[in-house]
Length: 565
Image (tube, rainbow, N blue to C red; front, side, top):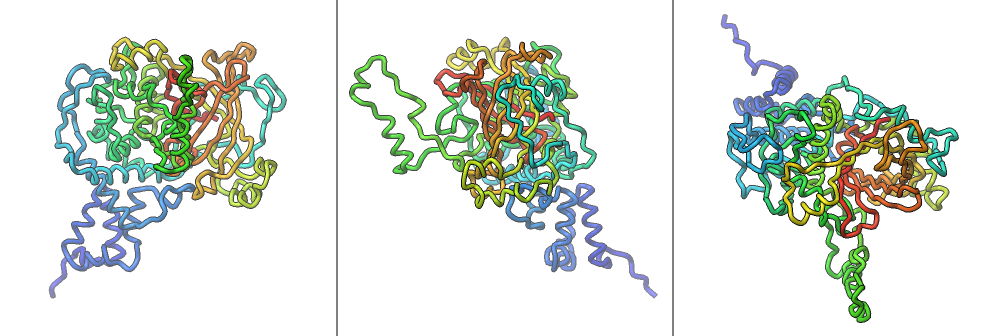
């Protein structure tokens, strides 16, 4: 009697699925396609199954479950398609991953403009759709990370509004000095998470060797004239850089330079961040892509009309045009993040932190798990029915109702830390007009200050598809340029702030905060920032601040924001 030899073909489909899922978990998902090519039975079991159990299991073994995200950025999930696309994107990235760096020309300084040599070929320069598809897939993986299970937020959805007429008020709320003393200085209070994210693990494996050339090329080499290279592909690469914070192709650079003289930052990043010509009304005076009104639109007609001058104006030698009236600001639904600028700002901020802060603290803040949604959000179901944003359209018929409807979907209310780094005005003007920001003696000033936000009300979202996330109106206090962190509030530079937290059309969260002057009499500085990662992430927001009146010679300063309590 012949004994049949055991084979995969003799396994039930259920056992076969378990084997294939284990293959994927061990880092060999391509073995699924290889097995399907060997026999029709396997092909039909893998690609013609009556349900999606196999592909759903493989997907959830390798990646986080997108269905768990409270504020999703994708409309639907196709398990087989999405699994294949993500695996393909990973293989494409690996194909053009440099692996070990053969040689770094020039000095080890990040300011070097010499290009790193790689061990593999570069993507074909004429093929723009393939790398764009791969990079956008990586972006989707980052934006669908599983919600953070740390639940650090102590703020309920229905917040207690603490209205004070001055930062010197005591009453039942803490002033900024007390909040600063209670929450510490830096880094933010972000605990280690014990719940692993499969997607974060997959990303760490993917980028374990080095920054791929398609990402590193954003800041290594570069054009000396600062010419923009903001194609859709480069913007997608910049978005990944903004999220993950790679140093640009520098595997042998120490994580913490020995002294402030070692402050290394790519000249191209500095040139982009501190470009005084960057801000314009077309960008909404923020880190957004420029918006051009369509020809013949009311906005374009208004622009043409505002550019005209009267005869008396032209005859006046002292007359100057009002630059603030030359352009009509884009509407909120037209604004999209300029990831090229934000990636440069992330690089500049990271370089400052690596020089002046402990490397362990920097790594704690930059951990990719901090991109996960919900670190500063209350658990689902914590808000009451009257706070449900779905009731906003029916209840917002007056100012009184606007102050009641809504909930803190962004984790805005709390104590934050803001890092500001800038160049001296003389250095800024000189390098803007004459230099290339590659001066080895160029030094950046920096300060980390606390600021607190409390919710004052809500208004409808400017983006209809995000009606469940109403615009949050906030106010609070912030440490100014002379903040010292002392226990005497009378000697501290404390500014009042106000602003909004709202949505952009691509699903990003927009932070618009204005701070007042030393006397807290007039608005002085305006900041615009974009959330990094999911809503309420511990990674915080990244943006810029500049003069509130947007004068021609106003400085431009990168601005990371991180909540600490």
